[in-house]
Length: 190
Image 1 (cartoon, helix red, strand yellow):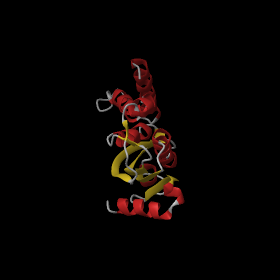
Image 2: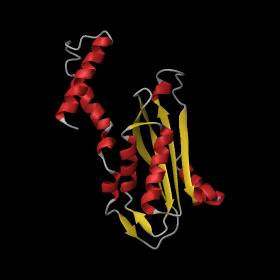
Image 3: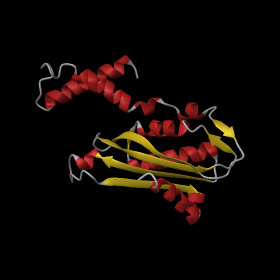
């Protein structure tokens, strides 16, 4: 993002504060428009990131065809309906056909898609489809468990209601035993 984008967001936040009945010139709020602009640009940096560039050079040909699971990947995102945070854990598994991906790339892929305005359902699907498209594995599974502040702080005000979404592709969708093995692995994180 450019300095112009930052300045535009900062000006909008100043207007928002005024519309809420606040005085953006009072001591506690003087730097708030700038801080909020920097925060929003950071929290939505996924729009500026390219998955192709992230993955390029990070896949390796490997004769391995058993399940690879990375569980408990922290994720933070903003609900596109209320611009309030949701956060939780993402669990990813895939069964390689001929290629594996560097393990550190999995959390980075989660970050690229979660650092955008999101719906948890779409986020789950985007992560799974990305891995499926780039690795062409026998199957991909993604489960996200998240707490949504739009449900906890407002609306129904349920502070401990976690939303669980899943996307199962290939062998994880067609073979109950494969899906069950994955779900067993991620239950171990509780």
